[in-house]
Image (cartoon, rainbow, N blue to C red; front, side, top):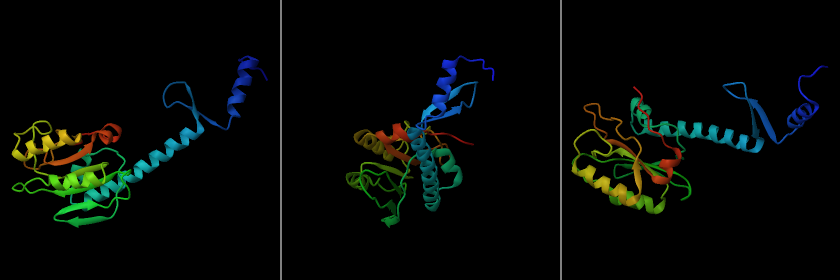
Length: 202
């Protein structure tokens, strides 16, 4: 058989093909070959599959709590959320936690004329600092909504800074009557930087 490569190159190619610790694949674009560590590749595949399953669970939780499909689509992109058994307490619906090392999702509703349940938020964070808070808080502030702020928004803004939290869905309107962002997704900085990207889908 006539080859257009040298013996050394032919030997190197065969050595790579017989190496069970790597995976050789064509790149999606361009005429290139990608060589990946098999163990790392399998771990990444498992993470992707787990991420997809957890996103399905998150969407189910949001729909169970009355969030319409267009709010879910506009407010969230893929993220790692561990969803557990729902319980109800004083109009706040919380998720039981397994351990403080896992991510917990807590949802609540704060009526316009009532104070924000900041003491409840603090109590939840004392039990598990890896908590994502989500709900209709009726809190408006210029840092996340293109509308005039209100007192609840000012108090929440201070609480976010004190507890190193961020609003995930900034400037993504969630009200059907205005451009206000009153349904908020709040995450600690470590989770915000690792997993979340906010998108607007119309």
